[in-house]
Length: 318
Image 1 (cartoon, helix red, strand yellow):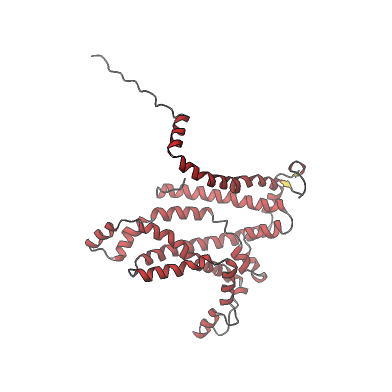
Image 2: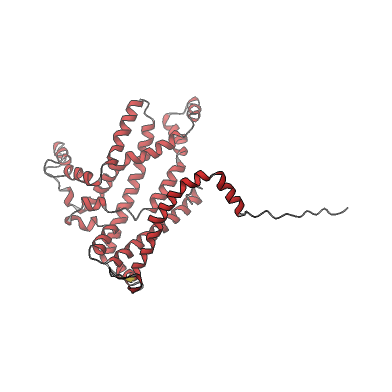
């Protein structure tokens, strides 16, 4: 018997013609994406050229080639400054507290809101909950400061009316309370807005799953545990990965508006540190070094979290 031999033909390589063929078929989608690509390039990638300032002794008014190169001098100064480590501690503390509270509470709130059967009440609660998102932090900080004031502040009046305290507490002057105040303020302002994403994910779960569960005698709590929560797990994981990536970049608006000199050791974040000790003192190169540190750590956290969740839950964004 003759041996039957088969030869494997190599797969044809993808050519540029196939790309242009797809481009002609989906040209409108590509054209719609062009403005967003340009926006990302102009505002996200083009400014990276400014990172060169961190390795120069930048002097305004001089051209790029006239600047003095100093290498890693400003990074060494950064890691030798005690204020930097204090700002890093505050940033991580408020970030982790905000991540835990600002991530768990919207999920619970969305599940509870989804269980409301009276649609009028559901819409009313949802509308009221996300209205604070549209209030600027300048106005929100004024409201929070007034509520925590010792002069007719709502919180102190309530605590004294319930005889929990005998005299008003100066909340805004106690550093050990500042992290909690910022976290609670952020939860109040953003919970309703963040809930919208989870409600949208819940609405994508097929109603036949709930009907089958009710036929089998499952209670509402069991339906939430075995249907609702697994149905939005992918959304939860993706948003959690993105939140971890921004763990060290929490901004400075809340801390700047709610903070004061009495709580400075607890309110100064890395962004405020860059503003005060970089831009505020005319040390542009030093401020750029701080921002590079923030960006590099954020990228490392993002890829680390993505890799961990990809192995554990098989969900990832990359």
